[in-house]
Length: 283
Ligand SMILES: C[C@](O)(CO)[C@H](O)COP(=O)(O)OP(=O)(O)OC[C@H]1O[C@@H](n2ccc(N)nc2=O)[C@H](O)[C@@H]1O
Ligand SMILES: Nc1ncnc2c1ncn2[C@@H]1O[C@H](COP(=O)(O)OP(=O)(O)OP(=O)(O)O)[C@@H](O)[C@H]1O
Image 1 (cartoon, rainbow, N blue to C red):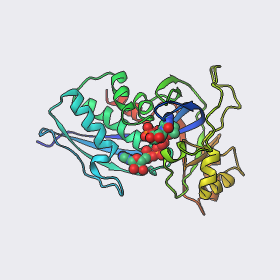
Image 2: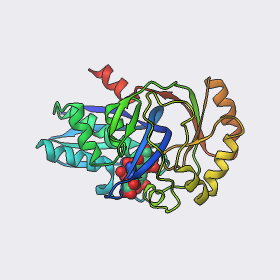
Image 3: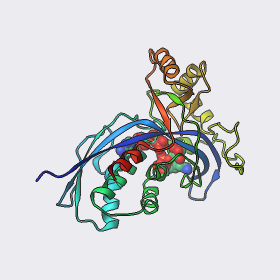
């Protein structure tokens, strides 16, 4: 018998703003950020195995099999649920690594939700999000699947409904290490907490931007070029830079001009992740 296969999307995210409020004793930073998803991402295909083996068949340059967040997510879920089944996994990877658009975290979340379904574990979202947090600060928002205002290290999530523009996303060909940016002595770590909800306009800055732009000329260049057309912002710790447009036609026009020299893409912002829309259709 051929095992049932399931293909699920693994979308990117943007940080529409990111303020750093302080540093915790464990070295992690307290943040306030707004996450929104893009209708753009990787695709994971799963097939259940009955021998308990977890195997990712797609090779990633520079990421050993057992360090891949997809494999780590599957192993943790299997260990904590006591499930005797295994899984074969393939991925079509289009999201850049170290781009600040959350590829690895999103892959981990898609794996958790996909296996919860295929292994028939029936875990609730809170439990999956808590497991996700142990894999990375950005995993819980992908597990929950709704645009959110995030606090703490990114795990305290309040759903929000920002506008859903079309974005031009530029992908400078450098991988930024999140740990490196968060350990830079020049990083601003004392933004006052925003206490008003929804977050008032005028708070769209990303506190990581000055440090990233200083270290990476390619990111600086992308910000300058896109900034000629719209407010150009950095997502997460970069390297990706984005700007919103009211229509696909306008985003396509700017993208066509900029992607003559830079890599990039156009995608719609979405407050409900395309992973959750697909899972909804399945159920
Ligand atoms: C910058 C963001 O992308 C915003 O969405 C995230 O907060 C980063 O999330 P992530 O990539 O899942 O990060 P993790 O894999 O948990 O952490 C990578 C490294 O970044 C630093 N880090 C991360 C998140 C955070 N709130 N404070 C930190 O200081 C830590 O040194 C950590 O070792
Ligand atoms: N499935 C995966 N996809 C991408 N990167 C992975 C994966 N598993 C492990 N990694 C490792 O995680 C690192 C960060 O990758 P990721 O694509 O999540 O970066 P990012 O977009 O900057 O993330 P974030 O916005 O969460 O900081 C990679 O450089 C790679 O070494």
